[in-house]
Image (cartoon, rainbow, N blue to C red):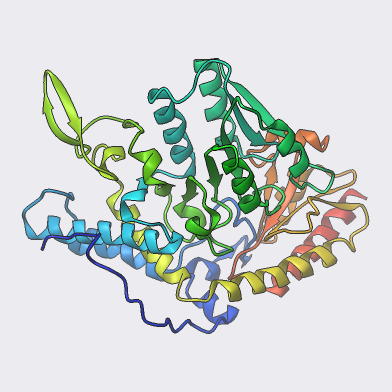
Length: 424
């Protein structure tokens, strides 16, 4: 049962998408039936992690029940079965992102590890020289700030920051000013987890490539909500986490163009990433195994494949359109609350409403509405520099997914009115 992912292809026939119906979608997510504090769960924390459909849960159970074995090079039945399922999941990711080859798909623990892999491997490849510059934006998640700071300390590099305006939008003109002959990499979030801002990533990539500068895009918030085509974007690296796209935790993806991945040395050493080992030296395996040392999160990869199967059973445009309706309704409804201010009002925005209410700390908001079974996120959302830019200690954040309903936004509205009444 030898499995060659370059030979095996997915069906290219015209796909018959499921008709999107939120009530039917909710039936696929068992956790949405549970009670919290005696009340139905209203889960509005999807930017932190998404809930899992039954098909993903079943994929995890099925692997441990019927297929559990280590992968690659095993000659027995279970090993070959597990290998086929795991590498089949890689093929699904390749198709999902429209990458050129499965060898460009590296399984990692999440977007954070993907960014760290690129930073460390490029460093080991002596890609950077003293005084070189890396450009990021003011709205980055800590996972797209700290790895570059560590690299700057290690290699005497400089981190340049693209500012955002009062709406929370990327200021493209300032980005153009920051590019110089010292710029060696641009790393930008596709959609902001704290504001919902959709960045002009295609234009960012195009401008960067005019100067032969590679671009990494953090797509953790983008893949559940919009179609991502890495060939169309022409980005050089793209990362996302499985747990935000209806998959399990501990699995994610780094996409990289072959021209870069081939030149980058391994991130970690160990089994499964080698071709030959001796005490005199080691030669490394081809892509993608070169970057996947040790026994991987096999079940995580398989379950991520199941999550992508579930997501792509719908037309992603139907999902985007529905979530836009939720966002517009939530924005208009919450702004009726006296003293409430939305942070992040970009013209192009997805699935996130971050807000503050005058005189009430966001932590108090989150704690009180939890008694009504409503889950939101409060804090700096791992974007401390961005929250400080708006002179705030924290925000409350409601983030939506395809299984949320209009009446859940109404419940949030009523709960926030109750919070205001308590503090009045």
